[in-house]
Image 1 (cartoon, rainbow, N blue to C red):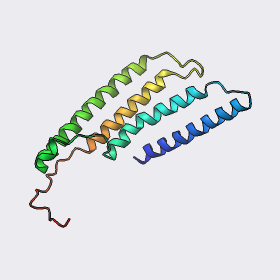
Image 2 (cartoon, helix red, strand yellow):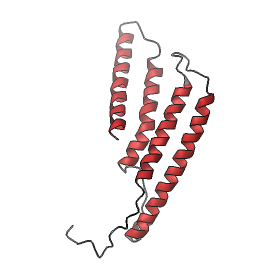
Image 3 (cartoon, rainbow, N blue to C red):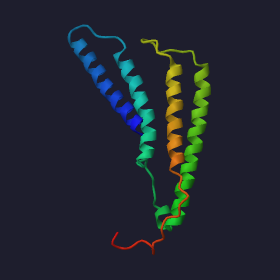
Image 4 (cartoon, rainbow, N blue to C red):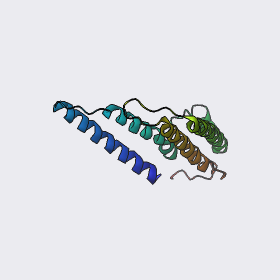
Length: 152
């Protein structure tokens, strides 16, 4: 998780710097080519690694309207089912993007940046998200409502 934070903060700082340099260079009458494309590539990295970070922080949107009415044990079962489904979907996406990236030969227009690298970033992003979801599967039975003291 700390690595994801460092990558995210570095990428955001880099985007701010790149955009600032691009704006200043345009004001000076000498615009730099590829500034927008480079910022888009870095945003892509931030977004894909944010999925795993959001999963680790348990900040994904969840609607507990029905599940919250059940006992903590049933809620745990539903949470585990959701985590298993997340792991399965992430692993399938990761595998598919890995296969696609191995065949990719195209590059971006201005910077000639290989799309294969972008698809490998997708592979890594979904792999990390799936592994974090896998680590959140719990086999411990939550305490029943009777075992939890009211002043906690």
